[in-house]
Length: 87
Image (cartoon, rainbow, N blue to C red; front, side, top):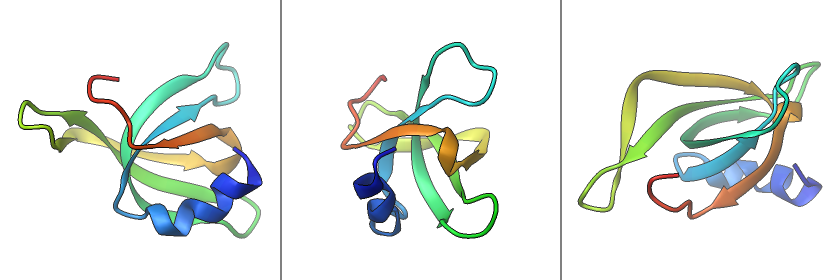
């Protein structure tokens, strides 16, 4: 992610965003639409905790059961605010 996106992380807590994630060993990035819960941009392994969400017919987002994620900030390729439903 860009330095600008990284600086935005504290303002995105509780927001739904689309994260392009490429963990080590993945051949290509995947999109994860999630609500950011906590972001730690310090220490040896800066990371982000989020819960994956799905769009529902009324236009809101609903948490997916059992879909909590802990991601290293270095594995996040980019962050898109205002994700489209059904990504």
